[in-house]
Length: 67
Image 1 (cartoon, helix red, strand yellow):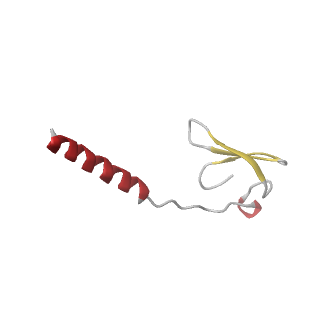
Image 2: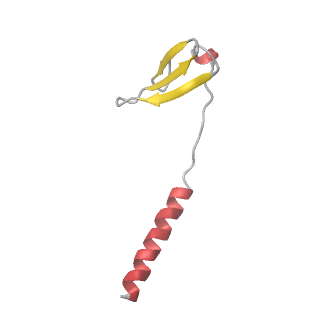
Image 3: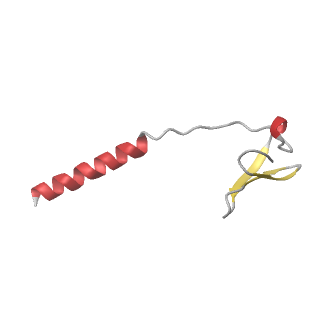
């Protein structure tokens, strides 16, 4: 029983460590890339994968490359 607990504990420690070590990268988008305004009010992602950016000048759909 102790061995099973130890194995499960080790597994969860490795799993949590793997989650912490993920690298997250951010890319800045602005009017130069096609956004209608630099100030974004809200961001959402639809079921297809498009990102939608709401600004005071309108709604912008982003496919990962272009607006």
